[in-house]
View 1: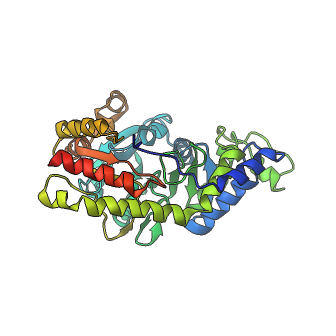
View 2 (view 1 turned 180 degrees about the horizontal axis):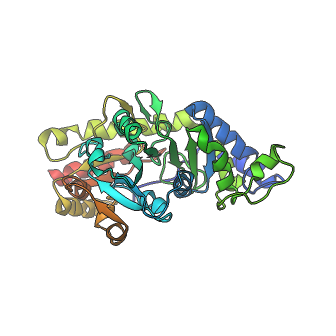
View 3 (view 1 turned 90 degrees about the horizontal axis):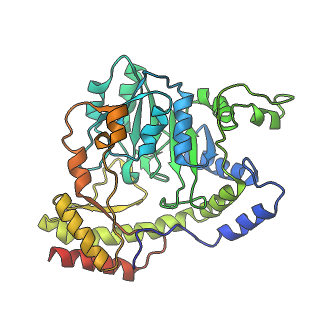
Length: 376
């Protein structure tokens, strides 16, 4: 069986995790967390980065940082993971969904303005498959209406928009280090990216259960106390040590995945030329991080048949999100503005193929052969 995913593992993680285990500190906020955060700040050029137990937690922190309150509205695409919406629903917001671009599966920036009301507080963009949204237009619109922009860049570490790292363009950004992502911190993990210095100090407080503990350890206060709302948003030192091991091999992991992505893209091009599948579209403004490879087929029935066919061949392909606005929660806490011209239609057609660090060409060839056999 060719699995859909295997967590990235290079071997370099072992020594760092063992070192953390043998240290006198394995709770959050240790040396390895500091190493990782410094790495991101240097490589991304962001004002501040803070490791979190998951991208979900990082998104929850963004909602708290921009003071989302009951009655506020937050605009986002419906084609995303539930955490993108839940983070704001938990603070009382109403979610306003708009349609996507069929080519990239990203929010259609041209539809955002029509969804803005006096209650709108923020726009949350999702860089699907590590491919950038049209950030210039979105930032210009946000500036015009005084809105916050939050980048859900869970899938987009090392992707760029016009040379700028994704997650570092809006006011706040988030990454995921879940085991399905290009880089992992031992199965779960996330990162809050602070690009607006107004949020930096409070972000530390929120992450430390609402205390000024970080300032205390830096000698800025003589004792720490409860100063704000917050929660326990610190990952363990073991997670940070695992991630630090992954960061030592960033270029190698990226190159390996890129070879696999290109193999799929070139091998399946004949099917695209015949018009039986569509391949991913990468805009010229974006350098993507080859997070996933997907194809689009005719409709949901054909996708179901192809998934069953691949399963019989021992290949673990999957579909992705069910649009949030069609779910029970989405109908209760959100509304779709405008026409659902593409979100549901395109999500029904999309099928993801196996892709992970270390997948060999033999397995890639098996996948390609099986897809071609189905369409033959």
